[in-house]
Image: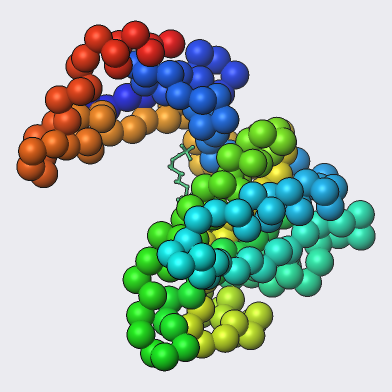
Length: 220
Ligand SMILES: Cc1cc2nc3c(=O)[nH]c(=O)nc-3n(C[C@H](O)[C@H](O)[C@H](O)COP(=O)(O)O)c2cc1C
């Protein structure tokens, strides 16, 4: 059975029967960003959080291209990344004061594939996202972008692949969004039930700890 939660600011914080930390429970992906520039310290804090992620053999394969809006307007990296987004994403992401392309190494110097590169990048971005939440910021990840255009525009070396663009900022006024995006801002969030994704014994057989007293006692 899937779980649905309502928009942040309500009782949404407990995303299921079991409590999770508010930094995780309260995270969501808005489209209404406040265009005000973010202080350097906040941007660096996000990148620091990503930097300390674990990686196989501590290879740290993640790389980030950071575009920002300043008091003078968007810098060249922000403008360049925005141009690589699919039009529906561009329609709201232009207001995010920070756009970050998240890249990872997928081919080693010896030509072998680095299969865990996207996994490692995902860990780093997850840490960045939790750090953002702790600062009152939001991250909306975007897969709808032209990775080849990022490679070309930013001279990305062979072996690295842009995987996502992150829109980062504070929550803004949804009134400025296109209608379809505004409608999604208030939509309930939903997830698969744990029994659909946590197994034991064989794939597809629900992990039998899910219905236990212990799990219930952690309920919010
Ligand atoms: C790798 C990845 C790619 C995504 N691509 C897009 C995208 O192109 N456009 C978009 O609006 N949201 C995108 N999202 C956001 C998801 O739609 C969102 O995380 C999901 O619906 C769950 O909502 P929540 O983050 O508010 O819990 C992406 C998320 C991830 C992790």
